[in-house]
Image 1: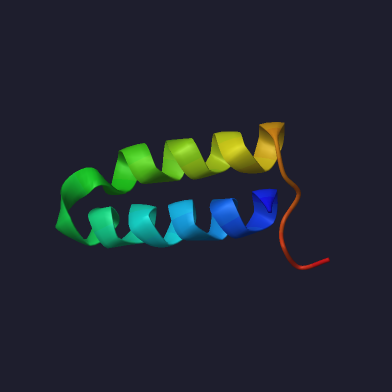
Image 2: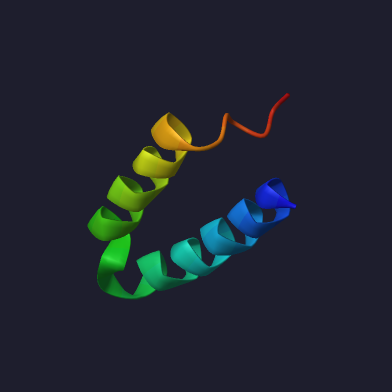
Length: 42
């Protein structure tokens, strides 16, 4: 469930990035990777 939620957040984040929030998006994504979840590759 957490990974599904993470993927949805990432999709929304990327959609916002195309508009203007790219730097904020990268910071948020990095914090998620470092803090809560491992990369989905596993």
